[in-house]
Length: 467
Image (cartoon, rainbow, N blue to C red; front, side):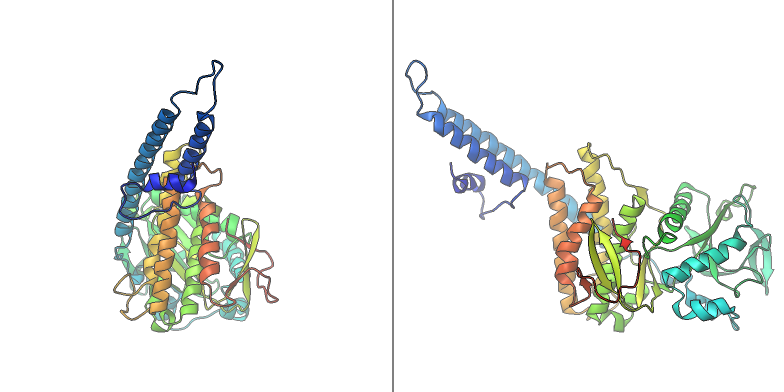
């Protein structure tokens, strides 16, 4: 039996001719049908030991055709369920979040709240202009950690007044001088100072309830700081400088604090700037970094984020020029630097990825969560009519079409992932970023922005890892 004949059987009763993608389960079933029926036909005319024709060959063929046809029908039903499930998930995550940028503290908030800013020579010389290079971020960490090491893990906040404003202190080692941003159920942010040390407000402190989600977030931040940032494995995360969990009987929402590095803003603020969303090359660079930060979070921490809206991607102003060197699956890639370094943040909903590759249901469930981490943030790069943008005419039609194409490419990937019965020992989090690099980054990159040949002006000596 020829493949085309089996394909006709596959398409019987369908309004449109459908060609299964090579490698898909339906494709493999058709090939299987071709081989088995061809084998039966070969023995159809052969005589047995008594000289009689082999019986029931035609019957065997019909039975086999019917069985495979039923299997294909089941697969079609399964595929329809998967498509329906994907559409339902996309509909839920496309809803614009209620997040407002003023719920967080950024470096500009410091300038607004300080009339005179005294900065020591170390900051003025190296950290003022290039304060967000990874090397200088690490230098700042070591400088601050010496003083913050005086804090104990079980230290508690004590009420204190600063210029008639109510705040807190911990043994006068750190002062939480001014509440800033909108208070939320996820915590309150304070402008923070270390008395007689590197200016007035070098850091921010988040005060929150002592619960599993917040404890998990702090643990993840310490892991990221110690294992990733300090070892220069990635630049797409924010540092934590210290944390305390009070053991005394005080208000629950005051029991847990984390002392964090500051960012300059978030992705929502960027896509609200017309000059940013009108610049396709800049916006694509930001988009590529956003996807790289998601992949780095999945693969370097082993967690799925589960809350990838545009408020959970921060940025730091970047003055480095050249290309950043990345490694993924043993291959070298180079991304051109731009004005903004994108950082994935807020791990309150993050959950460890279950890597039980032998349980198909677990694999499918984890794949879906990983897929949603990527697809949800696509809405941030679409205009007001279709996504979370602030303008009806921006991003440009060209950029909008690119994002729609990317959405379709990712949908095809998850459809195959959830309908295929082919087992894979490589985690989906690693496979999908390779798929993204090949089918999205290299396909939609502007000229010389994302390249595979090493340029002369590589910025980082140690390549950043994505997987």
